[in-house]
Amino acid sequence: MDSVCLVDILRGELSQTLGCTDPVAIALSSARAREELGQCPSRVEITVSPNIYKNATAVGVPGAELRGIPIAAALGAMVGQSGRKLALLDGITTEMREAAEALLAGQAIKVAVADSPPDVLYIKSRVSSADASAYAVIAGDYDNFIEIGRNGVVTYSMPLAAGKESAVRWDGVTYAEVWAAIKETPPAEFSFLVAAGQVNQIAAEQALKDPTLKLGNALASTSAPLPAPFNMIWRAQSLVAAATEARMSGARVPIMAVAGSGNQGINSLLGVLAVAEVLASTEDSLARALALSAATTALIKHHAARMTAFCGGAIAASAGVAAGTVMLLGGGYQEVVNTVQSVLAALAGMICDGAKESCAYKINVGVGAAVQQAYLTCQGAYVQAPLGLVGRTIDETFVNLGRLNSEGLAAADRLMLEIVRAR
Image 1 (cartoon, rainbow, N blue to C red):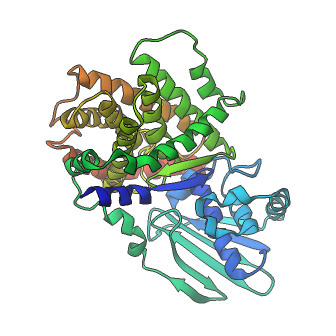
Image 2: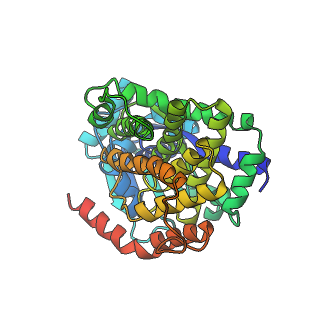
């Protein structure tokens, strides 16, 4: 991996979103189906994979006062604008919201969970009017359409594997190669990550002005001066928790996502920004630390899956924050490895129980542990390898975490879905 390749991959891992990715992807699918239909539909049928259902069923949706899959599907069917991808709900008007709510009131939105979807990330929206119907299917990634059709005729089709091309680019890449590429790349090449982090910081600062969002404000309420590392732990927790809580409640704040997840983007970028702010780091140092954080997050998710049974925002992104913090503290490659290994060993069992405001509490724990562990590692306290989940190398640890997700947590994921659907 060279610097050009790394910069290109990291650009591809960034995406702007408005709202939680899962319901917004449902809205995107309905929007594209509506465009294929050529008119506002009178009925919308949504079929999703179990993991999409779990993540979308209880989370706030921007542009509405409601939560979950039906309103997301209805809003997408009203707004269209699929070309805006995961930011499409920024175009919702009062008239569109009222039309979407009318569809809900008329029981025109139906939701089903697919028993055996072709991918863990799967959404099919079928819309219909009195004389026509159309559908759109997303799979593999949140904005990746694999099939579109109208009146039973397929108008667009792409193999599922082709939509995972960006993930394939991580194949065979070692963590040492990532580190080397970051070190040899001029920091200015990572300026887009600084800009992305600032987008998330604006969301956090807006959230800290909203008294209805409790966690971030509670964390930020301390006025006592704190010594290192507690000052930067507190700052990172308050910003990350505030932005996450706002996003999960459905606030209309743009967020830059990393590796398909807004919460991962909030933590991996904003956690490092907070540390750099307290340390008064240079922008060049910040840019490289953000690159390491984002790359660590994305590489971990590559070894696991785009959608995981464990909490990616709290685990993968916190490992990224830990790596970036060590870099800001002047640590080298081995210190970064020891820190990431230790964070994964400590947090790996944190289960995803769906997207909602309590995600902010998990990520709050994760980012605090990440910054603390970076300091501990610099003092010689870290998990020795190999031990438990931690492999002989960090790349082996990533593989172990992927196996834990796909093999070990599969039953826990199914049980969690049963718990969520029982409500």
